[in-house]
Amino acid sequence: MTLKSTATRTRLRADAVRNRERILAAAREAIVENGPHVPLDEIARRAGVGNATLYRHFPDRESLLFHVLLYVNQRIIERAQQALESVHDPFEALCRMVLDSAEERVGGLCPMLGFGIDREDPRLVASRERMHRVTQQLVDRAHASGQLRGDIGSGDLLIAVARLTLPVPGTQGPGVSTMARRHLQVFLDGLRTPPRSELPGQASSLEDLKDEFC
Amino acid sequence: MTLKSTATRTRLRADAVRNRERILAAAREAIVENGPHVPLDEIARRAGVGNATLYRHFPDRESLLFHVLLYVNQRIIERAQQALESVHDPFEALCRMVLDSAEERVGGLCPMLGFGIDREDPRLVASRERMHRVTQQLVDRAHASGQLRGDIGSGDLLIAVARLTLPVPGTQGPGVSTMARRHLQVFLDGLRTPPRSELPGQASSLEDLKDEFC
DNA sequence: CTCTAAACGGAGAGGCAGTCCCCGCTTATT
DNA sequence: AATAAGCGGGGACTGCCTCTCCGTTTAGAG
Image 1 (cartoon, rainbow over the protein chains, first blue to last red):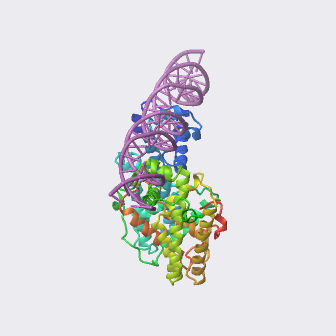
Image 2 (tube, protein in one colour):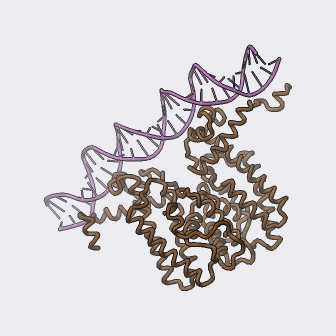
Image 3 (cartoon, chains in turn purple, brown, blue, yellow):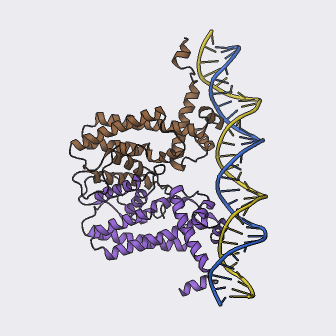
């Protein structure tokens, strides 16, 4: 709080805060549906604000994408920590984290990563580290309980969640999202012990994908 | 009439045939990597031909996308039929079909479906029906052998393959494709009997997704 | 080998969508 | 009620993408 007051010398007006939030939410939706190339005017339209308001809050596309990334990361981390604390069965907690991430449609944000966002920005680094930490804890616990097959690492899990929660463009039917839920469940079944086949390659930890993801 | 007019009224010159093939292959790659909005000039460049050559073969983007779809469908169908005939274990055959589709990166083509392609074109309808037929056979056999969990239908399988073979944009590292292979295998493990959890929704047959896919 | 027509490729005109600024109006805050 | 922060929409600018023109190259037949 005190830190924040130094950073924001002039506090935002209440409606400005509200608009900023709506822009971030609208941007998330629009990017998930149409990719990171979606026109900024379209995002403003969805958010119910003028385009100038959007540009006032985020001077360019890169800035907007950056803040969307932070915003969604934060939500995921919070829900994962909640699962870690309140769900006692380790495998159940893992499932919960995966399903929560699916709800946030985190996969839809991956395309942003290629758009000139500075992955070494301190805020992003901190966010990524928190994400990795909680994921690692969930995976470790599930391994220790003997429910999660040993040849799956925390890196596997994060990438898999990204993949499994990608929207399938061009298939917007109402049945698609319930079907996505089914496939997620099949995948989770495949994660359980005992393994039913040998996986190619080797278990990937979080360090392995430092340069490729988030 | 004359030999020419009966066989192929507009017989293409050898180099034209070659170029046409190269354009289709390049288009497939470019679309998988960059989506269906990829500039046509870029596709021509990848194919190693002038842009005018591309436009000569395919008068507009829609025409090109349409033929790419037919081209890839055909390859998938052929490989699936081969699996059906030559792989005797029913579940193995199913796996083969899924892995082959992944190699063709069929998921990367889904975004095309939203781009004004006429799904009722006779050539596409015929292709789709052949695809559905062979998929249904593979699923039926695997069910009959008792290896494939009963709550998975042929529609589930086709959609799942599309999803699982989507490229994850923004993550182009070399490790990603081998990781994709691992996740596919986990999913296939989840498909085996006995089911390890109950799936939400219900098994989807091919008719269920007639309007949403391919 | 020669000839012809089919096919090729580069360059550039034209169009269009997306970005971003300007400026008069509205509203939160005191 | 005063004031300044914030808002919104119109529109110029820009850069990219599409598609065509036309001179050059090459496959294929005799």
